[in-house]
Length: 112
Image (cartoon, rainbow, N blue to C red; front, side, top):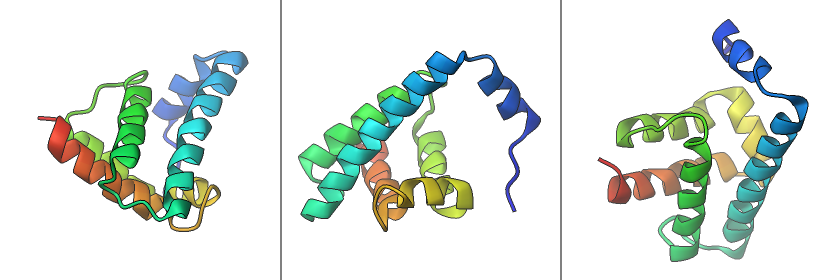
């Protein structure tokens, strides 16, 4: 249903393999930490979850700086785009929806 655009492929091609590995490791560390919070039963608005969402936002800002609506839209793609959903579900079942909900709270409280 969703295909990678040539623009996105072009952007990713500008990164070296080491950079891509570094970005993947950063992302995976954040996703694993959020998954651990989900496994512990932490709510979306739990302070530790929200701190991790702040880390996620800081990671996203390495590539672009979304405003509140854009960040919440990105979070929506985590449940609507099968590739994003599968990526997050590989860390923990239900993680895509969990991150989406946590991002919505964080964005409402921290972004204009």
